[in-house]
Length: 227
Image (cartoon, rainbow, N blue to C red):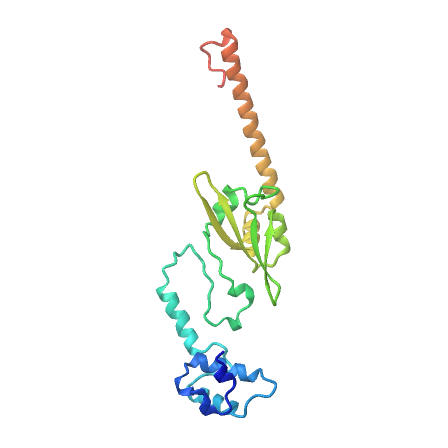
């Protein structure tokens, strides 16, 4: 805040006519926080009222217009979700945090390993935990640990691919909704994944045995014993 404004003795020292609506609201709020507000605070509020500013509404008109303009001009793809407000004072920390990433969550939850690995060592979950007065970033290595967070808690995770890796973002509530819709638990998915891996392993071993038989036993020459 400009020191000249802070030290103002009269309303004439403020150059109120040159202030934007948002600036005027900020000045009023600053003076309201003083133990001994200046005598001209009431005059400032009267000016704000004449401008059509509702001081009970913490969103000044200027900030609303700015947000609307930025949203209209945004080139962010629909698959990217960005939460932003020019005047965050009415927002919780969770609502104010910006998360970016892909949102094709069904593919992430069913085709990747993020829910089935017992420990994500290289690409853990990044959890944005709202503690009220601070936003804490928590690293979570297991999908089951996400259950201790609230539905609105935001999460980011990386799906490592062969040629490239993509970040995804979702809320803990999104994960709970997926599990409810699929009628499964994280443990169910882990067991399902283990069964699939064991089945693949048996097939590989069986194929290797058959190939060795073909190479070492002339009796099987010309036969397709994998059928």
